[in-house]
Length: 258
Image (cartoon, rainbow, N blue to C red):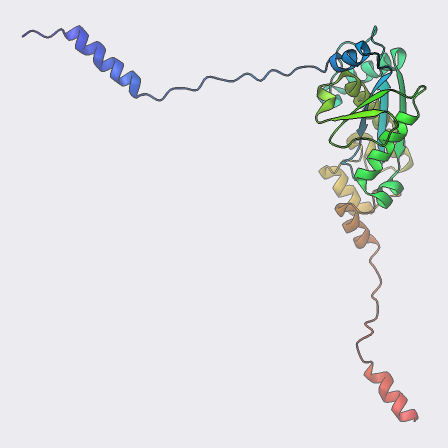
């Protein structure tokens, strides 16, 4: 019996190929831009104005939280709106000017003192609600970034990751971010040496080094851990007497006098 060598060779090659592990196909993650779809759906139902809200500055060790509320003009929605963190500083500035020229907006600030008093979450929600109330006209519906709804007289939807989904929230994130960045640059002139104009108060190594070297400023948040450590280093708490320790010298002197 004569074997076909070409067939046997092809079978051996096919066995080798089947034995090799399959290389997984590369996945491409598509990043979508925020849309005006949710706002337009409400407009079709007769609900207007519709606002988007977001804040900037929850994480830093210094400076305020800045919240913004924006009501976009349905006929002049700026192109290229996106989560402010996905935009360059130059592009944020361009969109900031375009939003200011075409939309109704307001800004509210929660100071470090309010953050110290209320905690960062409550101070942020307070600033967001205040921004809504400061709009030229009270909206009929509000979209806010995050998990928590706001204390407003109108309907409110909390949208997790909303600054990358809802156009009005994205616009608010840009207004809040640019406003806060400009404010931190102004605070850098008031408190030189910390580098606020560079890191905007976030806990980067340069800021931590300056905080350790200079101690906290009036613009730092008192109860954030690195600020507490720096305050204890530069302003150590005085030793308090232990009321349960017997002062033997005083007792001896008192008994001698008696």
